[in-house]
Length: 354
Ligand SMILES: Nc1ncnc2c1ncn2[C@@H]1O[C@H](COP(=O)(O)OP(=O)(O)OP(=O)(O)O)[C@@H](O)[C@H]1O
Ligand SMILES: [Mg+2]
Image (cartoon, rainbow, N blue to C red; front, side):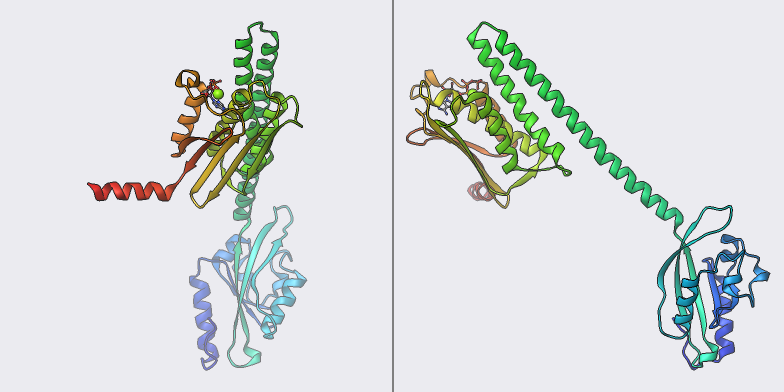
């Protein structure tokens, strides 16, 4: 803070000199004409300046002339005249045979109520090491992002390779049942591969569900639908974004349900409609896969739960969601819903009952 203009100039000067002498920070005290009055010990040490050479010397003549920076001089002169304020002025101190130092200057005008007695208190902060550390941190973060993307590419590639090996095996085997199993395994791997592709394409770990489910269903449709004019697989998803692990679970559920519809709902039929729908509202969300096929078998013996049912149940439980299978008349609608409010209400009702 500038001393009050009523202070006697000598008292004020002595005060300023005492501050400089006691300071551990690099400080300079200058006259309005930019000649030096004093420099703190830490300034002389940090910038290799002889303390005795300081008083009376022009700032530009300090050291080997490295402080002779025209822009700095004009800023200081403007500050002394009251036309400018120097707050965080940054410049590179260039010295022969030494690496440049990045300095940040703050200047305080000490006004003694008389234009001839203007003094400038300059504090000098050397931020070179902090800037290097910052740059290093930025570089490391960038490198980490690149490595993560590289890893995701590799995982996606490996999954594609596993999927194609499964497909080749499916073509070779004689047994129809084994072929179906290999096809299903291929689809399950492909659903994770599709997610990996989405992750590799984005820089963040969050996954937008619309493009993900669209790619996923395109991939399932490409290998399982023969005539796309007759059999439609529509995806309707709002703008929801989820974390990578939640989207893996949702993607696997979609895969199981869409494969089920394609495998079981249209026996012998060539035409049909399958719809995948996902929407969320706050923490609540619902996913449904609906077909207009023959519906679930009425007799329990024919609706023997397979691996698909266990996968869907396990993933839904992991997501704290409830699976509901209903008649779509015609067809089947399977919905998986996570309703946080309902869950809270249920708990509250149970508490009251106790
Ligand atoms: N959309 C559907 N339409 C008609 N029937 C269905 C539908 N989805 C499932 N089913 C019936 O429910 C049964 C159980 O399905 P689930 O996915 O558990 O096993 P799967 O599809 O037979 O075998 P897996 O999933 O292990 O390959 C199926 O065999 C089928 O009879
Ligand atoms: Mg199934």
